[in-house]
Image (cartoon, rainbow, N blue to C red):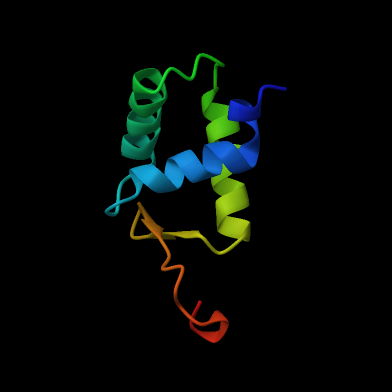
Length: 81
């Protein structure tokens, strides 16, 4: 597997797109554009994108609030997450 297709790498790329709350569709579109601009040629399917979102959610890095994805603050204490 290409390193730019691993779920953690894609998760990090998704977090870059969540500089503000976005719908899943917006995040997917921005990720595709970002990957094209940065010469990531390995294909990422929507299913793989969703799996990366699942990883981020499980790690507490994102949440879905009123149908939009929100990146959680990394400087919050564990009890505040």
